[in-house]
Image (cartoon, rainbow, N blue to C red):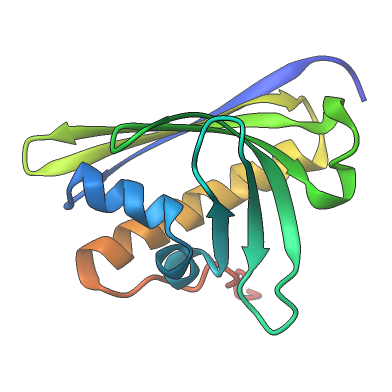
Length: 154
């Protein structure tokens, strides 16, 4: 792969409050309901975080560190596949910017410092839209969507 970096930005509007959106990202019991994973951390700058599959095996799939925490408006974390955690070059960064927007919230997720053309870059381009759609559904209706769904064969 090259050293070229890329980024992915996704913006969504949610009928909710900044506090509820921030909690949904940082509280494992809420994240499990829309993501199928729990985000586990002490949520202090420098602390580790783990993205744990919420199933019987409880597999840690993604790891990183908390870079910045400013509840309820901003969270920045580093992000790497657990299998590549020892390689500093494998880490990317995710920023969650949460802004009150009249009677709703504008959530901007920026995943940057990604290696262009990598499996991670391709995976997050498919993953973030469905995860954030599920977050929106959970907060607006009380029920997330199936983030593991696959397209139906034609």
